[in-house]
Image 1 (cartoon, rainbow, N blue to C red):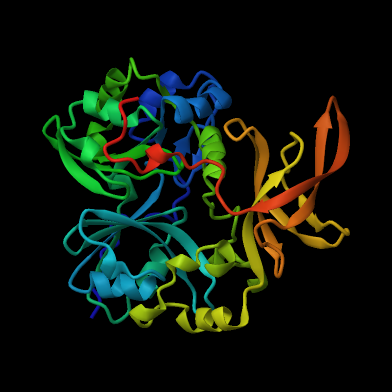
Image 2: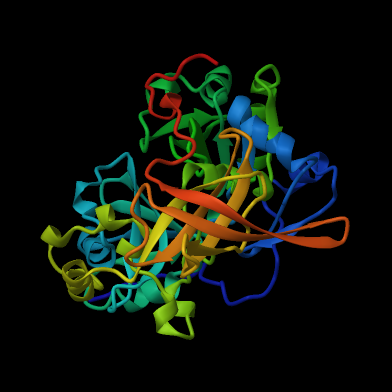
Length: 401
């Protein structure tokens, strides 16, 4: 039997909503530019994307994650349902923990990636880049489970950077420093429940704060009051994009095309082709795409998602990747000049058998200066490690920066 509540599943509407934090974002938004993220107005940059980036690396930046699509999963079969849906073994995700996962179609191709929050015993929330309620409901056949898209019911802020824990302590969240990576806990905030998870999209020390939208503005105010001596800054999506590339994090629609949106099925990617084989648990039983992924593991993958260290200082945006003898090897998916690594870095999807760490390749970079386009072929290397992975990301309790 399946029990479904889709009261808030209004994702087919084309309206653009102001975030519960909109009035505060408007005050900080010196550039007066807005973009759309999912169903919400979002800020690309408040005043300077480079300086906002440095707040995420040197002090702390605040990013509005309310538009992240949220799905509440409850009911007697919540766990078996999620274990059937996801590639990872969700039974190992205990209450108070958060886990990263992907979910696939029957061909083992990734539909989306996201985080699973085990809020309380048998109560889960799945956060994703894209609206997934249709696929989640279709996959619920035979399970006694309630699935609600509750995006509008939860306001969220990401607080990221080395001073983030100190700011939360200053705000009065007792013992928040004991929260371990991918842990979550609940705190009293002005008489309402505030959930804090030690999660983020920057590869640094950071937290995400989740609260009832009616208290969103007050949370913003208290956070900035507490961070006034810790370098707190509002941070837009342009700075977040730089931070996530340095951390090696993938993004739907950039590193992979969601399988449900692909016109040509050959243009999608499997977990193995995204470097996420560690998220595939074959020993847990049946899950969507298991048969196809077993076959791929046996016969090999078509692509490898890799990290490139590129010579020179020109970002290799949308560049082709070639072997040293000029044969096509793949394409760059994300690229930037990294202020922290002091290098031109990129994520790239390479055709097998290319992609082993240490492999020497070349990228074809086009760049424009004063209305003139130039082309350079820069040597590059496939590297194993991400470009930003500081010890403070895992340290518990974090140092008092």
